[in-house]
Image (cartoon, rainbow, N blue to C red; front, side):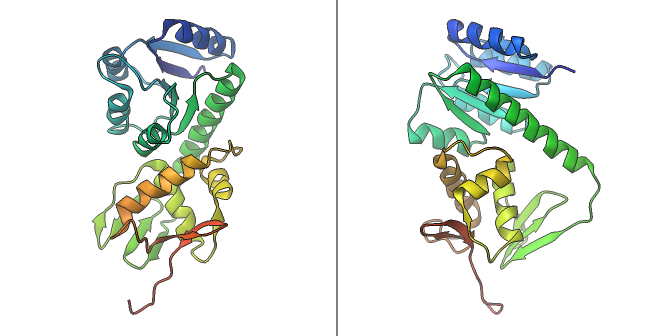
Length: 237
């Protein structure tokens, strides 16, 4: 069965190039030239992956991304000429799964698309297999692995899929420090694309949601020269 992708891109030359190439790779492609059209298509059809430009007329790419993440975990791959760390932070922080800067090679685009679809398929397959409930606890933070639910002091914490997987990794091995590359391989389940900014952005957003003082984190500690690990708490703290 063909995977159906939605390409949201206002540059018709780029859209035509991407559509032709991915069609040759066996994908079914729908194209939206602006945010309004994209929202209409998303309301009426189901897609296995979204290719999203940030700079769109009318409803911009960030608003489309917020809309998508309000109701879906479909993989979102951002395609944008806006290559600053701020734009990466915004895109990844709002729940994008990957980021590819223009100009990009069609070979790399295909690799990223296939990797994102493979990860989504593996995640869905794992979720469909019944497993005993596992509860991970670190101080006032609790993660229910089967329900994909995180609470702090009994109150739910709203995390994106990637944020939850990073937290699960660190809470499962609380005494171990993980490098950025190890986190990428474990969470993205794919080759390391040498974009350390993606990990830093997700860690930063995760800290904003679970730390009392994100600037002085207690739960996710930076291990200089290595990466990140869970903080240690006294049992009576």
